[in-house]
Image 1: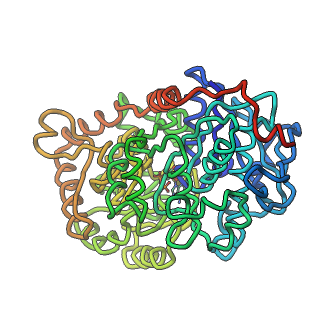
Image 2: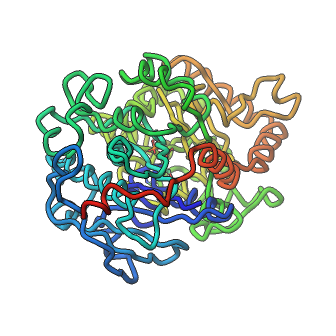
Image 3: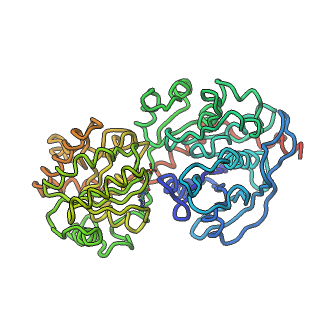
Length: 504
Ligand code: ADP
């Protein structure tokens, strides 16, 4: 089974969030199950500068198509590349006019979306679909697995080729976050090279705009998202971000596959960023990571202070607007806070202010830093993830592995992975953290209080730590689900003529 894995981020080269971790973890697991996987990514500088070697494959076709004109794009080429540590080939989409820009793959230096994002990511979808049409005659995928709105037009182009009578691969689209949809003004549609009929409420039109996310949900053969609970939640208007109706219509093609963790990167026994490695059998050594964290965040090195950690984008999605409201309670109860994050300017300021108000008890690092992320996950006693919505969430999974009890809201993947320390759950040995329901300061406070209460019962605390550390959310399990999905799709009709190769 040949799988083309299409994405915009890849750890450790280019990462803005969990998507990069998924792109690093899932493809090797698919490979281990016998899939022949290749990646396709834009040649963002962080990727292009890391590749070892490239071999040209082809120019992206720009000639007429059976249904009209090809996408209007600057010259774009596909090359086959290798990346250090990546055990599979990478198709690099080279279009300097689109991708040779520093910083975030999505945002300009002013923090706003690049004005030509529609074309930048239409090119990615177009490259995927044309690879599916034999752009590289040596390797034609059976399945194109696309991730997030950046790749959303790939299934639409594939469908257009299929409608034109071509042999096409199957398409799978994975939603990592419904809140980011790739919405663009109607005027861009004419440049996308899609059949005119697709700009329709039954196609990719979303209230007069072009929606890349809607295109993918509409035209992909299968849609998945990153946890079973989120797969149910997005069928509801409260979390469907306006696409719940379409998702309900296609619910028979939708499933939730829980993300995995790359335990080679996230394991306290082998974590090179930690001063003293520790594991389930040497938990006392976790105190060394805690002390290091306290010192580096300017916290008083009190061994018995309950340290709450945050590693997060600072957005309303993450529920972190609740945290400043309870910091006084947290500190008064003897707790400390170590927060690493960046994002919303108001939230950043609120945490900086809290650190000033509570010197020695609240430490804040505004920014994005992988090493510090490991220090917080390992050194904290509790990792806070009070999200308003959470497709899967990774930091609570990292917390579990590090004996850092997650404190989460009962939503999305958080609900699927953390078991609350109720008396019953403690009693039957299933508890792994603290879970609250209401998206309110009161709700968060109730969970904080349970964390303090459990910290006064050290044996039960240790039991919850051990239980969490023993759990595994491995990529092989997720990959088995994806493979079953690929296998349920029609086999690629490889022998039939491809629309593109006929015309070019
Ligand atoms: P999302 O993808 O919505 O941001 P996830 O929990 O799925 O949330 O994944 C977040 C990933 O980004 C994790 O690997 C986490 O460690 C990392 N991360 C988030 N914020 C930071 C930061 N400020 N510095 C370093 N890593 C971060």
